[in-house]
Figure 1 (spheres, rainbow, N blue to C red):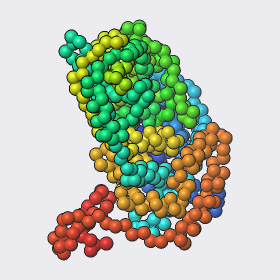
Figure 2: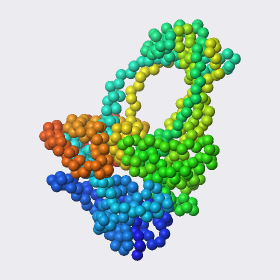
Figure 3: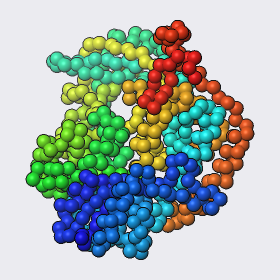
Figure 4: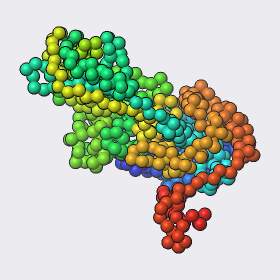
Length: 599
């Protein structure tokens, strides 16, 4: 008989925690959720004030029996599911299914799976947080109502098998809106004039760009304007009129939140959001590392906070000063977004001494690459700024003004470890004096056209969802995965493009359910969930307020909406049975070719 039974979600997490707790302790896994709303029906009793009708998840009967048996044998049961709203809800469902009285529940949470964090958490168990549970229930119930009540309408009016989701529908709308912007965009012509100049007795030219005339900025709209300037300056002397030297500092980015980790992993590693979260989950739950056994390598990976603990701060200082020197360390605090829940720290390594290269052999290539990204970003966030010497030169050719910019790296600082995005390449400019005359080596006029806004990628869509307050760290990846699986959008290279189906469904939702696809309304609902989590709002009140106008829109749409036909995409491949050109259809596993005669 175990004195203590600890229940977590996954076997990997269980293996990691086991080694930190001596004595008569057993750690078992619930394998995620064990109770949820039924798949076969709405599962929300609207007449009974939106009471959820939870059932045990099919296929988990044996697991539940086993957990009950272990719980009965143990003197004390601790629920150690993840430290967020969903984790709190899983703990609550576990308590219900295992017949543990709410008053006797011992809930423990840790932001990192390290010996110290686990042992400290076990010393201070608490009860279930009803506010967090209710916030999760509100999200689950609201999403279920939207999904299960709009989807049959889509089946009836568009085609079978379609479904709608609350946050997913807004994401599709953003992608469709962007596509419309691109389609409506009319390019405008503009020109730049670059000149290659040479300082006397030097061999290497440098480049200056036309900026205006007689000290006034001038934009070049057509070739005629450009040709006049080229003609005017051809025989003019290029004279240095001003030299501005200064020092520029570049500060490091904060440690990762879920969103910034997903964006950088997409940009730098080419990971999809789903892949990033899967690899991060493994790093958090724990891996076998040399003679240390199973240990968690990063803090909890669902967070919108940039805060770090003082212990982590001290570890970073020690590591930076030992490896780079005292002048490379700077104690930095980062301001967290006002909408952030800030319940957790930023994503950071749990053991700063475990550098990526020191444990490379214990990690898969993907784990190594993501761990290195997280590790370096965290270390850099506590380092001194990079310093550049910059120079801006104003050069005149008669009444025409040109400018050259250059910078040289003076002190690398945090850039020894990490930088966000690509560095701007700026050429070296020779040491120039005012009134110095330069030789013109080459004139380079360049015609360009304004470009439409770019299509979203997974990374840029996450960025805009976060900026607009739509969804939370745990929702970004499943949201994008779902709309891809539903074929409302497709990926072309890395770009997200709406399908004809996506456009049709989006149009129907805009016309019939304005609030459901309204960005501001969806962000407001998200704030309501936060208020519930903080005990400021009652969850059923939020559902009631949403449901009254929603049900009116639903009834109206059922009566008034006409059937929408989606044109199938015809290919140039003939059917070998009837000779008609095959069409593209969608199934469970994506696109497939079908004879147009088969409905």
